[in-house]
Image (tube, rainbow, N blue to C red; front, top):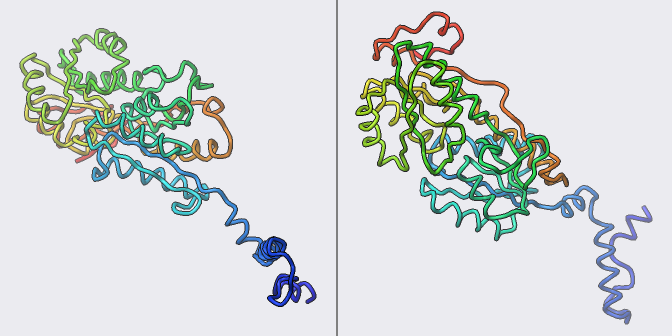
Length: 344
């Protein structure tokens, strides 16, 4: 009761007293701190962090929005409240990859605490913009594009999650051969803005399976029609679509063009078979963004990128679109059907 009485007002601060103003102000501040409930005082003292999110595509695309939502969900599960102890600054290049450098520089200028990137193109842009702010990649081949020389102890300021690009593409080539043994020539459809680091491994795998592999490039969706015409002219009978964000955003268009040209098509993009492609095989890409939240949490608590080993995908989803197989006149072997999740 005596303490409560003391806290009703700061002593020595009556208007009729003649104590110096400086002393009165200091005592008033001290009284205010004592009068504030401990939980509220702790909340006021808690630091608010600023997180950057950089994507090469548009926020309006469902696949890209889902990545940011997975990150937000992961952060909430770790106790972060957006608008409270964290603020997320999201930047979207909307398919205009020449804007990535400017957007990355803008996040650096804001002095964000961490940058999370969606796609290899965004990761490379962020890494060129800063060597001091930690970068967490939500996918891609971090080592393959030269952003670290050591997965166990990242050598630069980039860590995160990578999705086994060379291993996945080799596996997809094997699945194409198993689904359609008649295949002799496979086109690899790639975006040159997303560096392809595994072409030699793919060429070697293709040779061991008994077919040729030719690379075709598309820099924008406006080039899709012409590139598929080139693929047909080269007498390819299958197409392997790079797991690039541009193709993920336009998966249905790509799958429809492949079917129009009577091409067996496959990709590491999770949504590709559901969009009409024959085969999709790859890691759950949203898992990379849920895991990114854990990286962010550790970095905000004082870890350095070099302290956080790059994580690699361990679980892969395998889908076959049986309606597409029927349209192509394919009979999918039962041994393959039992291993896949079938879309009818």
